Length: 286
Image 1 (tube, rainbow, N blue to C red):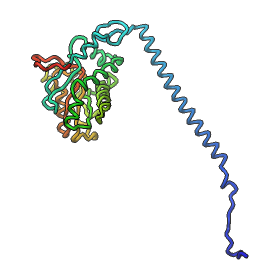
Image 2: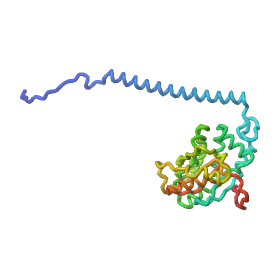
Image 3: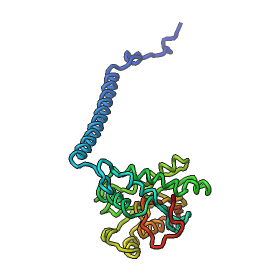
């Protein structure tokens, strides 16, 4: 017989072993609310996409699209003008490990017109075309082969910076899309490549188009290109990316700033390079 003084006290809670119906209802309502919010978000994105498509179609009707370089109708860039981006070359870049920079095209004629339309006149339909040309340049420059030959398995693709005024006027950092294209193609070749906006440009007074000649551009750039300290580029292999290379002052100023932070410049890739006065016998890449 059990001693009543040592009997175990059991407290029975009627709801302890049964699910709380109020909690279950709240959970169902929460799930339903989240589902409705997700559906509403998807619906808004769908409406926005449809509105953009409709806007583009209306613009095409009211203002028919023409080639960015020659105005041939019904195309963003015609085949003839696009072929100019397969006739690039290379220029000496002493600070680079590859000792050269590479370009998709010569900065003249149809190539110049197309780039300026994209850069300064918001012709963003050309972005996929230029991204593809930069991806092709990765191979034409033999960058992939150089990386494997020198056992370089990681790269940072750094776009040259725009001034705050230019970036605000354009509404975008246009060279970043080129850097993403280069990084993406290198990744497809098995190289750990990442686009990284690692440079600042602080000049606010003189526009690039007003800085004539190499000396004028160097004065504009002097002391105004800086590295973002948080990015930690010490010992990293860098590929610089720019849209246009004229005197080469911008590329050299960016390379100098990065080298001062112990980064290693591999090469520079650009959409176009201005013709040099006395090109060497091997200034063309095919």
